[in-house]
Length: 426
Image (tube, rainbow, N blue to C red; front, side, top):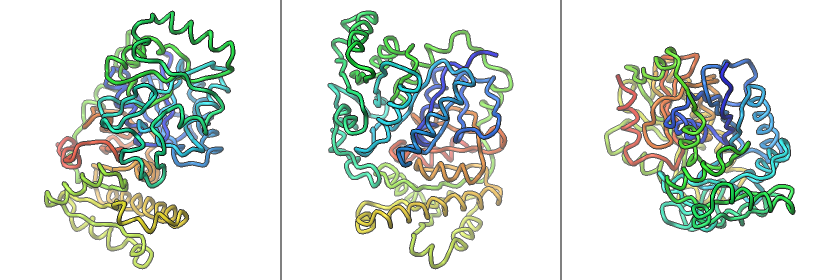
């Protein structure tokens, strides 16, 4: 059996799909697994395995424990390299979880240093002089400053890591990244290790050429961390002499379905809100989930709505603007309770749709995507072509008739929902 080249642990489901899509783009046979496998999953027909966890929103102790268990599982499958995948906007509170997770992996496997590379240039996330930009705007001044769960308080990666991690960060400038050879850079870092047990390197990462150079210098490290910006070049480096099995090619090629489709949106991001508005203007049938109404009336009306509009562009959403949720967000307990209620309601309605014969499911939002896939019982996915950068079509390995699209809240163009329905329709 060919040794597994890369084992990636992602902090949520859409982040896992994002990573997997770029690995596929780089030529690696990739399977995505939802949560740490409790049963044996065959991985011999792939070169990379991505495990989707919920560490973005978990308590830190549990997030670290789950990540290490996932890494151990990947190592038992022979993974030569590990990648800790987090959001390209580095959205983590001062208490974690990005720092504690990366610290724990380095400590567990006695790794001296690794990189912090959240950048994803194709989607407007860039790093220069330790500062993370979102579409040219400082992270702390972007829409992420009002994120409902992880509001960003600084744009410096080193400063964001300082209250989370035990270990220091060193920057690697664009000039030095290209002026020095790989050997000179690595020797300089090796010298730093003499005075540090562990540390992080934050390289400038502004475009795809930088991605390629970072992989040239650091791609052979046992651990990398970041967003998906390095994935395609990593795949190209790792995929030595890979040939796709006939059965894998066949599953990946058959991406369309003639079944009914539904869009389920839980993200409150500015991007998703604009996608919902565009979809509504297109004439789609739309139903909004409201916590207070659900507590009083349940989900019967929403379930009937799905059945009534089967075969038409259909959207069920709980997404709301910052203004609509302003009072609710002042009460953290209420906010968390409502978020859980809406996730569970959306997941239940996904199950209703599948029972009624829907075979195309599009979901917006990382937590919502995790809830939906868990409710539907899908454990592993083949990764197909991308509908937009970082948003692949996914085919459950045990349900090859289904077509699943899971979108991070901040990804995709304004007409993404219509595009996803078009791309999955036979």
